Length: 56
Image (tube, rainbow, N blue to C red):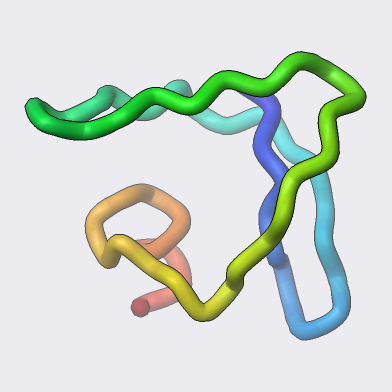
């Protein structure tokens, strides 16, 4: 899947990443190309690949 990733302060990029598996009780949110999304870089799950990569 394509994901918007905050790579560094002030730098937001789009990258191909593995599609995450939705845990029991979780929610899958799907957007179509061109939809606007809000980025909240202070919110982290601490469990996904991106959080583990940055050591959060």
